[in-house]
Length: 206
Image (cartoon, rainbow, N blue to C red):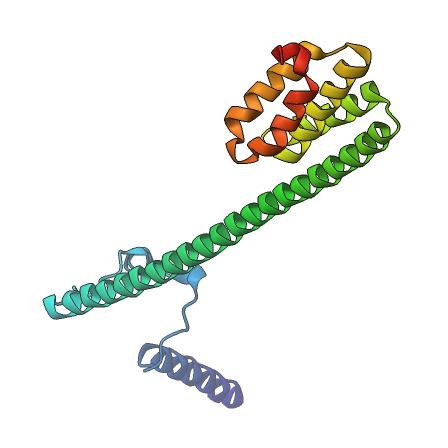
C-alpha cells in the first residue's frame, strides 16, 4: 500500500509540472498561413502604404523626362538630316543618270542619222553618176528628210531634178520650185545655183 501511494503522488506531481510549463511558456507556436487568425488575415491583405514623393523628387523626374525628350528630338533631327542628305544625293544621282541617259540617247540618234545621211548621199551619187535620175532623187530626198536645211543634200536634189527635166522632161516644176527657194535661202551659193538655172532655161524662159 505504501508503494502505490508514493507512485500516485509522483504522477500527480508530473501532471502539475506539465501544466505549469504550458502556462508559463515564453515561446509561441509557429504560425503558418493555414493557422493565421482572422485578424492576421485582415492585416496581411490590407493595402500597402507608400510614402508620397516630395516636390523635389517630382522635379527631378520632370527634368529627367525633359532631357530624355531633348535627346530624342536631337536624334530624330539627326535622322531627318541624314534622310534629307540621302534623298538629295539619290535624287541628284538619279537626275544626273537620267540626263546622261538622255544625252546618250540623243547622241546615239544623231550618230545614227549622220550614218544614214551619208549612206543616202553615197547611194544617190552612185545612181546620179549612172544617169539614173529617179533613183538618185529617191535617195537625195531620203537624206533631205533627215537634214532639210542642209545645203549639200538640197543641191544634189535640185541638180538631179534639173538634169531629169533636161533629159527626160520630168520633174521640171519641182526643179524650178526648189531652185527658187534655194536662191533665197542660200544667197551665198548664188553662183553655183545659177548654173542650174541655165540647165532649166526652158522653165525660166532663158
